[in-house]
Length: 237
Image (cartoon, rainbow, N blue to C red; front, side, top):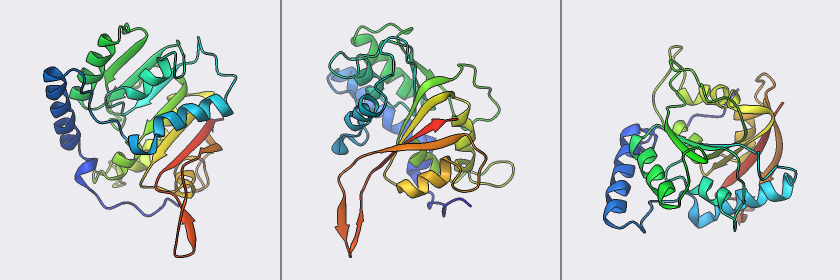
């Protein structure tokens, strides 16, 4: 049984993100130093995700590990992984987003950093469009920093009348190599809820298994502890 659905919001609409990245693209044209919003920057989510990979997955090859970034935005996570001071990974990297403006922005920033498209590429792709086959193959590490949050706020339903977020897990599954990892960062779902959504705790078929959590600061309120951001890593089995 899936967790209770979130109430729909404009943050779950393509129009909202098209508007956001069109604004960022225009601002970047006028001021190249402005690269748009980095989601979860106040929680240092990108750095914490990178730290998790270094700590929990030290065997990841710096030269051959492949990365797929879902809902890539301005591409910031892939640039961090590529940079010598960050991950220093040099394998194939691909960022996808359903907003054409996002893809244009990330591509422009990437070119400014001197990356070739074969090193860090970006592609317009709607992960929820079941009418299109995924033709890019499976990746060693698939990243989601707020994308499932946005999908969960989408009011649309599929042909069976289910909210589109219920089909997200199946789409992601085909993008992760067996033995590969899927790291999801969320401010809308707890770790326990993410486990229900992705690793079979909700009675789903085996595909993902919980591997570990990305640690974020905890707080206490009303005698209970919690955290404003959840980061979870699942392994594809």
